[in-house]
Length: 410
Image 1 (cartoon, rainbow, N blue to C red):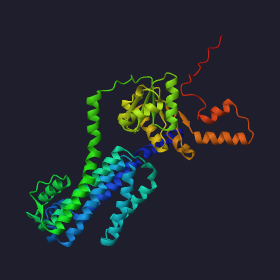
Image 2 (cartoon, rainbow, N blue to C red; image 1 turned 90 degrees about the horizontal axis):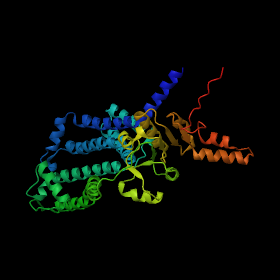
Image 3 (tube, rainbow, N blue to C red; image 1 turned 30 degrees about the vertical axis):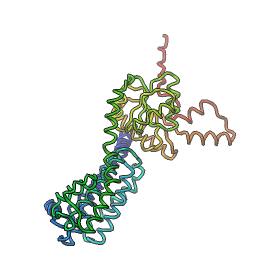
């Protein structure tokens, strides 16, 4: 029976760890199904991209182009869902609702597409709390999607207004070339808009290019360039020896106060935070000292290895989001089954879910404070033993040594 319960707990933990990937897979399948439903085979997509001029295209081909882009956006958003990005969740929700409405209106006979879309929407809504991250990755994905939308608009728009340019734009490569030259405001002048409609379209591409293209490139490549320059100017930062130390995940108020208390006792601490490296100085200023800080996702195995998880005294999951704390513990246990774990529960209703991860210590300041207050108002006696029992789920520290009984003298 005990073995059966252990298997159930492992199954629950496995489901918590992978369910956001299942949502991403469902969204990806919706995008791929659009390609299959609308275009049938890849050759049809190629034929669409080789339309000489949109003004000569059939209404059916013009209708298929937005469907193709909708499928592309769903595929891109599935990548963001793998990283549990909130913006990817929101955009997937909007795109799937749009897909559902269009399918009902234009191809209602595609019942399998409708069923998959409804199932995915339900899955997104059911697991909405798993997608709470706002990170550089999410911003990069959003910028990439925005950039793709702009390129598609500029390229196909150039084909549509092809007769209004001199020389005439009559193929997709020329349209793509003109779009890139216009968006980047290079303006070689080898292709000129001569009609009023073409000029208005070109103006819209220039404005969009300044606002979208430049910001997207900055968001995607900016951190890489800045990081390289920082290493060139400052060199590699000397790190402390990450052994017999504590790993604190997050920069919440609880995390910052805990780091201070450990530091005052002369204990080594490595901090993992999602905040970028250029904010490390602000963190150290708040802590009033120099600390070993790593920028990254605390649930990422590579980041935990970098922080020296296998040689640490304990890992403390003190983020502000309970779901993030649970994922941190799961990732830590995957790397080292013997690692000591401490977790904070910000919302007391999640305490039973956190217990499924089996941390060594669970702290719930919200529940602890309310229980102490209730006991005081009821006139109940509160001693140190009761306080410790309420504060810690085990009632003992994670480093208490077991006392070996002395052998009896015969």
